[in-house]
Length: 106
View 1 (cartoon, rainbow, N blue to C red):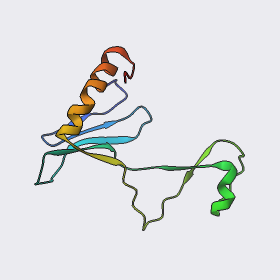
View 2: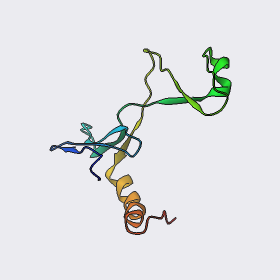
View 3: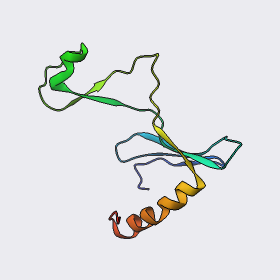
View 4: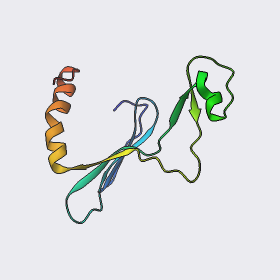
């Protein structure tokens, strides 16, 4: 990870920022039935096309591009993956290939 990213590591959590500046974590799950990890962004952000903002009761002076869509306080958006060891094992060949080649070989 380059100098612009912050990485914090302890025994159960790796915190980092992605290339969009979003706070992310890799964390050991507390699931007691099987080994799992959580992976993903810590806080979801929703985007809305500017040209349809009015349909959702929002104002936008722009007619192109995206705007932040406010998440109501009583809404939760899940943004992290809950992965088993088996799922991680299945993904590893793709991830390793990407690290080595910069490509996603399917």
